[in-house]
Image 1 (cartoon, rainbow, N blue to C red):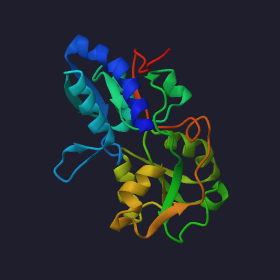
Image 2 (image 1 turned 45 degrees about the vertical axis):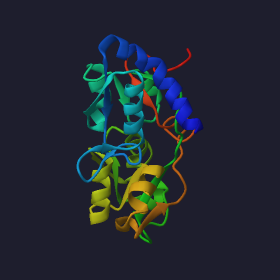
Image 3 (image 1 turned 60 degrees about the vertical axis):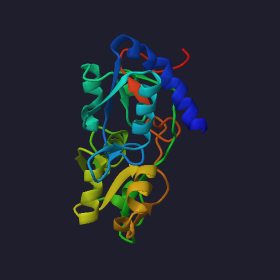
Image 4 (image 1 turned 90 degrees about the horizontal axis):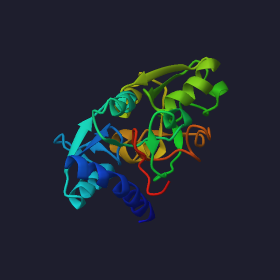
Amino acid sequence: MKKSLLLWVALMASTSALAAENKEIRFGVDPTFAPFEWKDPQGKLAGFDIDLGNAICQQLQAKCVWVESNFDGIIPALKARKFDAILSGMYMTEKRKEQIGFSDKLYNGPVFLVARKNTLSGNTPEQLKGKTIGVEQGSAQETYVNQHWRPAGINIVAYQGADSVVRDLESGRIDGAVLSGMMADYSFLQQPQGKDFAFVGGHLQDDKLFWRRGGHWPAQGRRRLTSGD
C-alpha cells in the first residue's frame, strides 16, 4: 500500500500537466520485466506498471498510449520525445540522472546472479573466471558486470530484453544471468521451467548502481516526475 501510494502521488503530480496539455499520456515501456510489465499469452500488455498507468489516465480523463521500446533505447527515445514518460523498471544511476528526471524511488530491490543449480560455486570474479554471463543491454546490471567482472576474464553477453537472457540461460548458451531478484523469482524461478535454477550467492552490491539507491521508477525527460522539489 505504501509503495502504491507513493507512486500514485509522484505520477499524479506530473502527468496531470501532460494530460491537460495533450489529452493523452504516452508511456514508454519495455515489456520484458514481469511482474511490473510483460505481455500475456495473447500479446496484451500486463503488469503493475500497466495497471497503474491505465488507472492514472482514467483518473485524469486522458487517453493512455503505450509505446514499446527496447530497454537500451528507452532513454534516447524519451529524449527524442517519442513518448512523454517512462513507466518501466529502472535503477536511478548518476549517469541517467544527468539525462532525465526521476520521481522519488518507488521500489527498492536487489540484483542477483542466477544459474542452473550446482553449476557455479559463487558470484565473485575469481569464481566466475572463464564463464559466460548474460545481462540485459543498457541496464545497470550491464554496467556492473562490465566494471567488475569483464576485467577479471568473465565473458559478458548483452541481450535486448531480460526475457532473451533467460531463454539463453535455459538453453545452456550462457552459464549464468544477472537479473533483478524480483523479476527472476516471479517470472522464472517460480515457474516450471525455472525449477532447476537458483540464485548464486548473495545480492550483488554497488551503491552507485543499485540496491540502496536502486529501485523501480518511472522517469521523464525535461520535466521531473516528483511531487515536491
